[in-house]
Length: 471
Image (cartoon, rainbow, N blue to C red; front, top):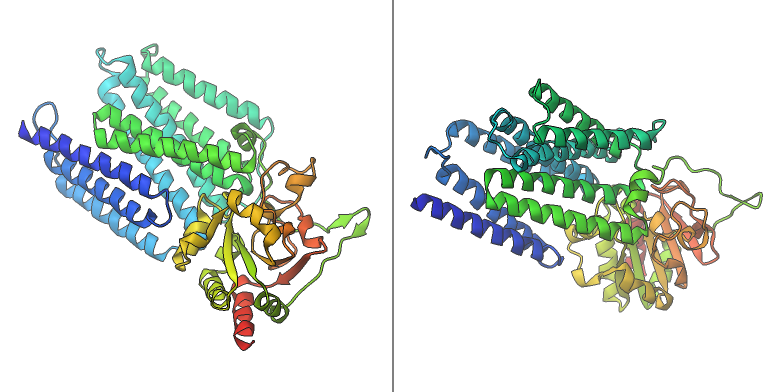
């Protein structure tokens, strides 16, 4: 029928929009438009499915009022959450939305398995697709919810159960084994009960998978869970023969996987090390002691720093999570503008895992309309620190910690960092001397060329801007 052809064309258009949108998201200058293109593609796919899809009996979708009501409620809630979310809460929102995607994929499997599990003509591949969607989707949902609670501060303590690796390995082996048995038709009695047992195993694995992982590894975990959700969605697309859903799932899954690899490389850690040997989640700072003696640090003030910046030729700003917490992105842009107007070269050094999610600092600074050309990735900015007069570190900690290069016993040893200590002067803004998200002290604070500038980033930067204007 002509409707089927129009539907397939609509799915093709949606898939092309997904691909172009994802491509545009790879560049900060086009990322916003890329997001819009992908959203238009999703709208095309949804509208086409609602009005053009027909089942094998030639019937269109029914219960349209319920479908429309669900879309309306979800759209309003999503819009309000996206508009009201603070930049500090963006990682939590990403985890929450990702978890909802995983839950939807799992629900698809739970709804569809009765139609196929009790049909002797159902193929192994179809059943495997359904059960794999349940396993991966529910794992992504449970893991994302734990990540949300960790990022939101509801789970601050390290929780690592005895024989954790054994338990996790046992759960995943049981889930995979049960999936194969169900798909292969080796279980004939109480199939429904065993499917829900599979769901329980997957949810438990998702919880235990993320529960012990430390905050410093959260960017990796978020991207990995994102890839899980994409895979689960792709299984749903394969089950329904929906090319738009299949393409979207494949794109999300592959992009999440690639991003996970990039994050691991940025930390010089294998994925297994992230999952089974996570960093700590931080906490109160221990006394900084070296060779039995209390370490000392120098302290500076906004007025002294203003003079130093005013007579500098090149300044590099290193944004971190503390900048997001203080919501100081607009003030730092004002600082940059003042310095630039006085002939000072200003750049931002972006570490791949700075913040609590991939690209967190890029999004934060884009919100304050910072010129994209000033955002420089770690590999490109590191050679420039030696030619820099002042490095201003704003709330970053672990990504500038020299222990990553100098202390083989450190849990972050081997992780590439920003070489801020190569600059003539390094000024670190923090609220206190507390440790970072990885839970370890930072020897950079006690170096001869380093100075501490204590206080809330927004308050400190506001004072700094005022001092600069007065010069």
